[in-house]
Image: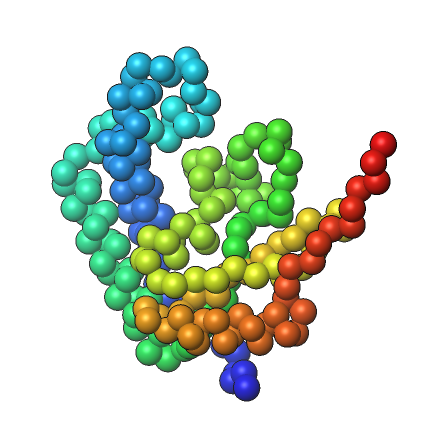
Length: 181
């Protein structure tokens, strides 16, 4: 049985900036040499992502890890009162690959080309278990999903909640086959 639904969330202040710092540092560490040697053969967004980590200091890394610890504790405290957090799996509806980068969400300009993924990467940032399900379909038949998040080691609760939502219609559906031309 599903209990009452509340509008609440963990305090994620500073999480986006900290995630981007840690991501950029790791990208530069892993791929900086590749970008330096073969920039002209790489996509501009990949080069941009990697080069962001070039000037990150040890102090920047430690500050980002401190934010991660604080946000992790905020998530842990949230799950003292709630079993599952439900939020969008992405900030925008599906878009064609050739559209390019997402630069606006709900009319608001994004600061970076990965901002539209904040609702997803913040969950990854704290490392709590998550499950994604289709929720609605656009008029064009594209899915828009939700993600369910639970406390660490509560995967059974997460799967049970996902199964309940699947039984209520939150499930994948195959698109109609396109007729051969």
